[in-house]
Image 1 (cartoon, rainbow, N blue to C red):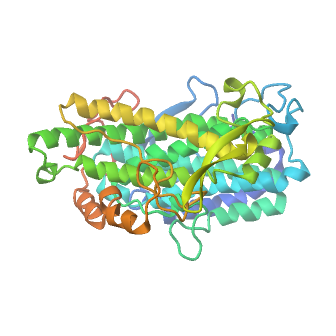
Image 2: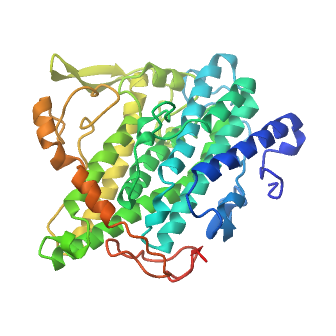
Image 3: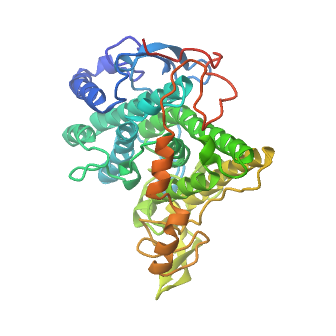
Length: 468
């Protein structure tokens, strides 16, 4: 680990002067982007952040006060397993490739650019949230997520510069030129163009959208392209905390909402709380946008990625016995003539849907945890996940209308019930009205419960962000 180089890394950057020079030329562009589009109003403050210092499982990060523009973004790959072959697809048992085979060049670049584009996008979406943070603890967590998304961008940019020459350098520049929600040059994936104006949205985003990231990265961590596999495995180490922020954030809001629901005889708004039915609508919105991120239910691209050994299934090596997947079918309901009918799809062409299955199962576990929190407060209310066909913008169900149980409905019926199922303008206005900045150490906004414990063994009263 070269932690004190201009670009911290463990890829022996000093011995590739051409690559080092190219990345050092890109670095000021990144800092300029961070200054313009990173967290607004806090660039000069000391933040208690963790920074990667190793790729080993134990002691891989340390905690200290850092000004975000001085954060040690770097390039870190996990150690390569010697003699590891490709583990799936038509390339199975072929030695992992250290360089990009010509026939896979476009596919690999597409995978890396799409993943890379999500990282700066989320920072842009969340850049104003510090102005209405519920506590210093949460403010610090927001910034931790942001700087690590910045490091994940570096991970993808390294691959583009190292393995794709001039094309890769141009793609890396464009990652800093697109903007979340920009009409002329938006981010690639639609979930990353959605506004995040309040902390309930932020927690839903880190719970559901970052959870998609977990499964996408895990599928890439099976890749036969060794550098991609190694960098995504380390990204997963950092990504786990982002999911923790979302999962526990919603749990804390749910608990407080249940408490205020009970105290107010069912009307938490009067006590400054967020009603549970509004939380449900936010879940419906962000969960369904996250489902779109997996791509179409039937996908020739997904089949090609698998066949080429570029992107496997979730826990491909551990979970499956047949790693070729050249036989068998998956039943996928599709809309034909206004009704749902099952279509038998070859397994390889259903890889997106198989990954989506894993994601939904993981999300259902969180719903069960939150419902236990509500029940423990003595409130009769259960959160649910809407059906995978509801409110979809990509894939087989885009352009059709479904209720939250997955049944086809008319557009009129869907529109009439939309305000009961998805957040309305009134819901957004209510939630936003509660977003008043709380920055005294140890204090917490009224609409959210304190966490069970602080960060890195520190008490909740710790000054996680120095504002003076």
